[in-house]
Length: 175
Image (cartoon, rainbow, N blue to C red):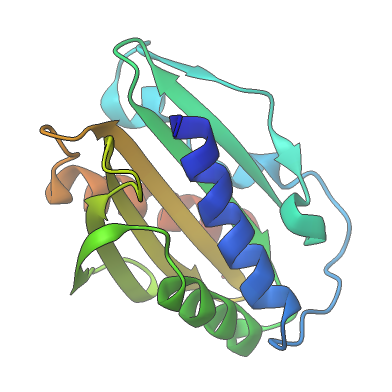
């Protein structure tokens, strides 16, 4: 399974969680691409290339894009802007329960509210996956790191990236 499909799976899971009973209401329409954190800024490099962003992934207000590292690793960054903090927490809870990661290990992560890091492999066992979920106010965020199966993203890197994503959400949404 290619890494772009994996990121799409995570986005689809989160979208399904929001659609299937979490009670999503429309946020003000806007360009939510400003909520996506560029890994080149976080890592002080130019090693990542961004795919064109998707506005309102899964039909929900927000934005998503996939950043591809020159070595083939990817980071899928998805942020949804929901009706209220309870809707965001419900969406993240549903997504965590249905995360498409095999051989899962999960730990609490000091990111936003309810931060949780799930690590393991892709369902077909060909890629390492680390998925960080958290909320900040009425925003729900998923950061998915995909790479070689024997060389997963370090947890501290994923958490640092998530903390910077959280700070960006706070600064842009006033969460």
